[in-house]
Image 1 (cartoon, rainbow, N blue to C red):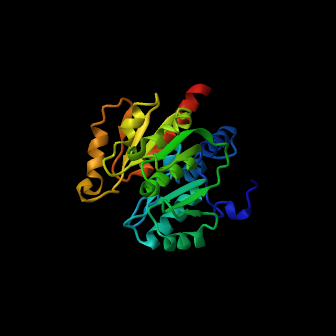
Image 2: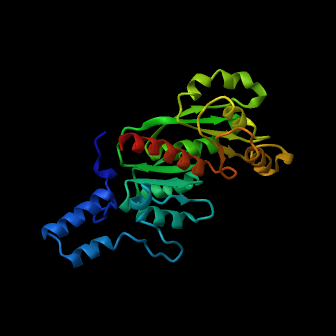
Image 3: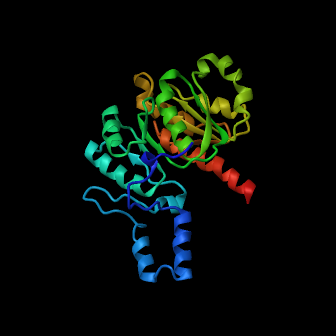
Length: 269
């Protein structure tokens, strides 16, 4: 896809990438840039000091992915200001747990953002690379899809291709067994479930693949807003199951993305 002018960072902004850092050092080496000028350019690296936040522009260099904005609890104005700063210095942006209203306000300042209504996430991706297959997201029920979709869009923004298998909970185990050929092709599985949270354990007994278990707050009173499935997953007797916090689709997607992209780095190293 050809980038349009609308998809470029704002004028005068610096994309904080490894390529930019290497180019800056090469310019100092060649004499094109003085050390003092280089210091001025590199001053964008640490973070931006705001009254209510300190956006981290250096994170993509350290971790390979920029800082993510957790939208819940922030005002629209705060989110817009933080997002503008991060988008000016990065090719990717993710804002989680936000409304359509917040998306409209962000889009006024950053026209090329998109909104995933299922996960309530705002996304920006100016980094056009071929996605790496290997991640499959599985849900116990339809009500778990919002959390699962947050995991999926996070992993996709990191450069992964994500498959989706929905509503295959243990109440109808034949539905899960029917999808085993697809699950066995994955390098890492994200299993999202509420109620009693048994899905990750069942999958763990069927496939030789790392499983990231995500308990959701879906369920009746005795599920205690996700505590019951969290304890079930933590107490799983199936090997290869790791657990993130209740409703933490972002954490699951990010971890799965690191696992999948890490296997790529090892294969190319």
